[in-house]
Image (cartoon, rainbow, N blue to C red; front, side, top):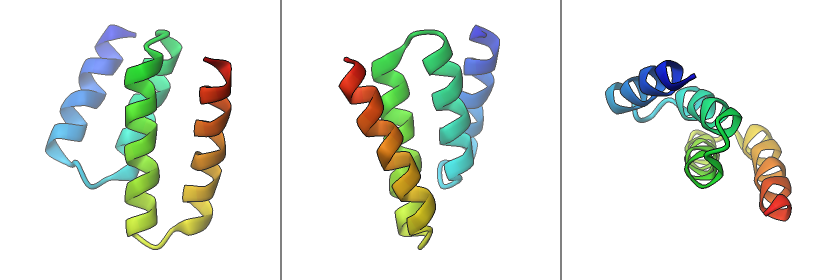
Length: 72
C-alpha cells in the first residue's frame, strides 16, 4: 500500500486541483491507519468540491469526515 500512497501523493503534487486524487489518497492513507494524514486529504477533497460547485458531493464527504472524527 505504501507504493499506492506514493503514487497518489505524486499525482496530487502534479494535479492539486483534482478532488478525486485527494480522495484516492485518503483511501490509501486510511487503509494504512494514517488517520490524521487521511483526514487532511479528505478535507482537501471536500474543499475542492465546494469550490467547484459540487455541493452534494462535498456534503457526502463532510459526513464521512464527521464519522471519522467521531471514531477518534
